[in-house]
Length: 273
Image (cartoon, rainbow, N blue to C red; front, side):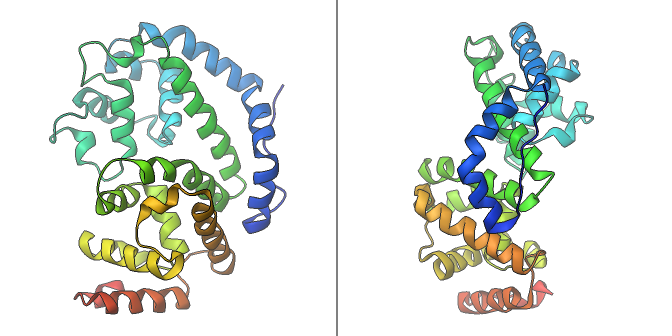
């Protein structure tokens, strides 16, 4: 039996529909034949994997692992993924530590090939945790085929509580958001920031995100996004902006960005355009 989630609407209406029916649709999707076969294979074989080379050498296992972190596009980049996994996460010189996209860091940390003498694949509950992430990511990807905006909204609703409640400074939490490609895209659109915003230096981007958050959410502290109410406010802002301006870079948004940057008193405004 095959089941694909149904999104009858996009934007705010589609989000309201997912809030009502998402849990039931997710359950039916996870029980589909293809998902069940993938889960059975992963559960039966992952415990025998001891090295990164063994993981990347099994395309079915690697496919589940990468999808669990939203990295399925790297399925053919086996040498790169092997290097990410073998370097681990404990050294500042590890490849995953140097990459701006922190999904690779999460992937490497989850498997532990480069961090521990015995990888986490040997833990009794490893398959359960990885498959839970795989099912969620697969469901979101299926939604994304119908609406990329709803995919980004689902990802933000899932990822932001962990960042908001995590250890670290306020700036560190903003850098975690900026280091996630899906979250960065969602925030930039919600705040009406132009695509060229990414050409600014990181400190200037940080100050702009904070100022925009103050403007639109009433606070510059990402810790408040642990609140369901605050995340809903952000997501609705993002979806409303997406509906009115699919690129997230409309003139009003660009003017808002200029205003925020001007208030920061930092140089380099001309680099926006």
